[in-house]
Image 1: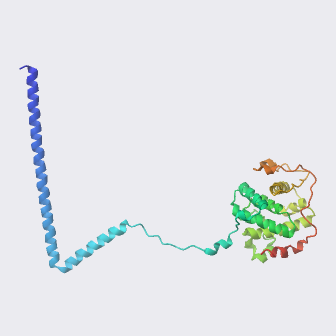
Image 2: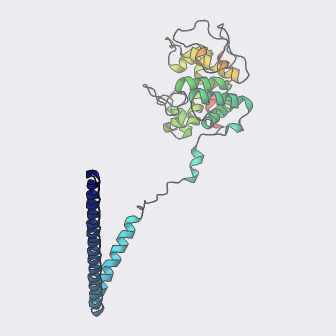
Image 3: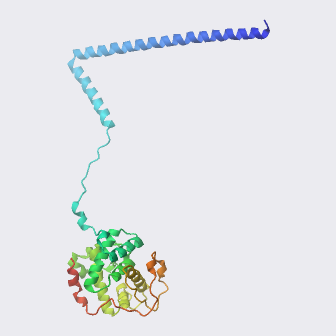
Length: 307
């Protein structure tokens, strides 16, 4: 036998010895753990039997244990339940009556075209804008004002924000000076009605009509309306007239000639996001909108017919 074979035989014998010893050790440990487990369970069983016998012999102790056990189980059950949130009823079924809104489908084709463009242009919901367009047509017909002029004033004054307020106190959609025209809000319940969109529109139309009648022309009347009768209006008149012409084209009407002098501060019609912004070339201002037959003194009575 060679030296290599002798080494291999020695290694095999050591391997067999180690494996045999390890197997014996693991078997002994397993048997020991099993015995400990059996003995532990036996002790636990004896303890349970002893407690049961003791509790069976003493009713008050049994009741105490039962009460503690029940309390523990209930606490565990409640801990697993989601927290109960108190439900408060904030509903008000009549709130819909206060909403300024109309389904755009209820408008005719002309009004729907104008309302749709305004909703997109000023990023407001189509339903309230549709209500305002509808109201502008009703009031405009009643007091002989082009409804597109009314809507153009609202667009320039407040961008259709019914809660807008200027630093000098002009409020609402048409930026009416509430403190100056508080008498016009009395038929609507007081000056807080300035923030009701429809009321503000009706009062604003009265003020606009009076300004045009007082000034004698549309352009001068708009200057009166913005409080710049004898001053530079900062391009206000041109902004309103450009906006009105866009709305007139959307309504299928001819645009009106614009004033010959156009302030530099006014943006071009190309600023608008609709092809309808192509307007007539500047020329002499024609004012077919205001009809002298309408007496401004009768406006409150006519507006009252709409309520």
